[in-house]
Picture 1 (cartoon, rainbow, N blue to C red):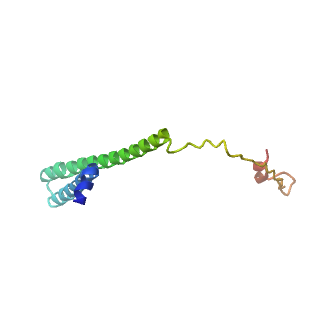
Picture 2 (tube, rainbow, N blue to C red; picture 1 turned 90 degrees about the vertical axis):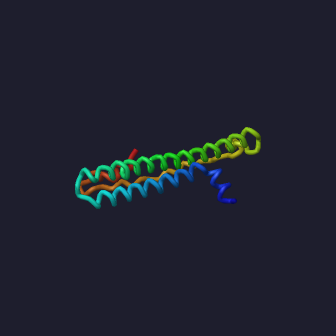
Picture 3 (cartoon, rainbow, N blue to C red; picture 1 turned 120 degrees about the vertical axis):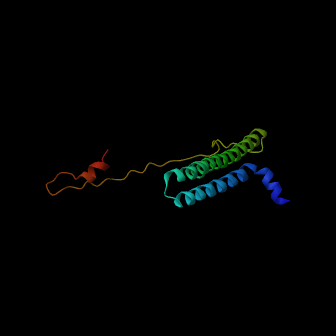
Length: 127
């Protein structure tokens, strides 16, 4: 009974998983069929049915899985929005806190080359 409840709630993931497995089986069977013959006219039915059909089912399965993930994210956002509007959660705008920032100034050391001019590394640190 637990499996049926999960299958009802996650029907899109279940269909996605089934389509992906069937698509992979079709690709493998198409490859086995193509590798069994060397004549091009005998290979084309395997390519069309196994190859294109398998790729199509894999694409539909991936699309359904991504759609299920997006639906979960939208449900989470709806719960957060309803909690914020219902007063369960409070948005902290940070006005209660006092932030202090200290400006730390470091003295830069200027490196001089042997001829007295500054090196490139010291020029990069200059303002």
